[in-house]
Amino acid sequence: MEKTLAQLAEHISGKVKGDPNIKVNSVATLENATATDISFLSNPKYTNALQTTKAGAVIIGKDTGAPVPLLICEDPYYAFSQIVVLLHGYRQHKNIGVSPKSNIAKTAKIGNGCIISDFATICDGAEIGDNVVIYSGAFVGDNVKIGDNCILYPNAVIHDGCRLGNNVIINANATIGKDGYGYATHKGKHYKIPQVGVVVIEDDVEIGSNCCIQRGAIEDTIIGEGCKFGDLINIGHGTKIGAHCLLVGQVGIAGSTTIGHHCVIAAQVGIVGHIKIGNLVKIAAQAGVINDVPDGQNIAGTPAINALNAKRAYSIIEDLPEIKKVIRRIKKQNGKSDTEKNGHE
Image (cartoon, rainbow, N blue to C red; front, top):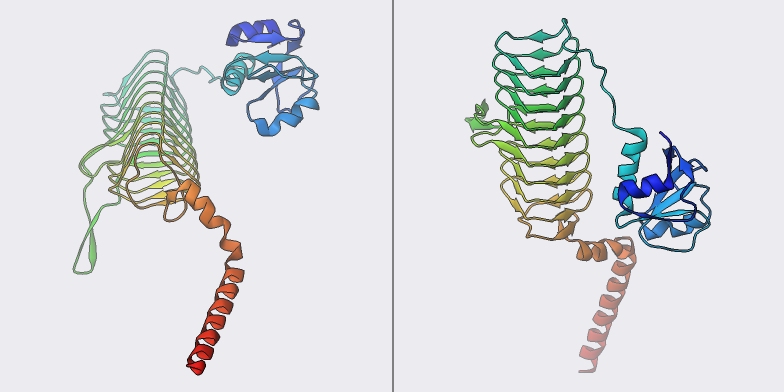
């Protein structure tokens, strides 16, 4: 879809510096853009690229000297995302209706406008809302409730009793509501504990591929409204995650942990069970969190500590061998001085 800069400016409530009649039909990075592409600059780190880009125009936060037309707006990255949607749109799902090769229980309820592909399975008592897309191989267990406008990609599994809100996306091979990791050890043997809770996923959540969200042991596992998960994430039983959190790939959270709203948890973070993480917390990649975290903290490291202190600590690691030599030399000198002092006495 081709648009002029004037049309894009109206779409994002921005203003044009330069020729408003320039037309673009795609998006690209500053380095790879051509005259028919629009790019963006939100990180000052890449300001120099603004002088060499061949883009037809660049979305930016404030007016600056540049050899290309600018589209100036309050939030360049968000504006860029709006323009990507306008020019390219979201993935379109082929409207095949309900495939006769799908396996739908007689007691299941299917809403209006649903697309259900070959070999999808929907079990007894399941309730599917309107305009839901369920791809091949997806499994919806007994008494599952799925809201409107949801998407289940191939081989997604929703176990019995779990509940999904509206506009939820479950990517391929994700598993929602498997039994939690609960065992009682008695005389050297491990006995499975039935997990009687379910998983509740609120509106506007996206779960990445190959994620696993365990059902609650006693209380439900809850994923708050607007959360976005990367791939290969494991959420333990009974964990409660607040609204609008971002979890990057390979995060692991043990059971019965509570996480506040608008937290950002980077890749490969591990969090122990039965702790509380506050609101607006940021956790750096590969951190190991073993204690409660107050609101608004930025933490890093293993065990995780204040991020600024962690950076200072890790910055001297490569110098530790030399520091050790210096300490040995000082100790040796001090020992010699004490000997000489004792000799004089």
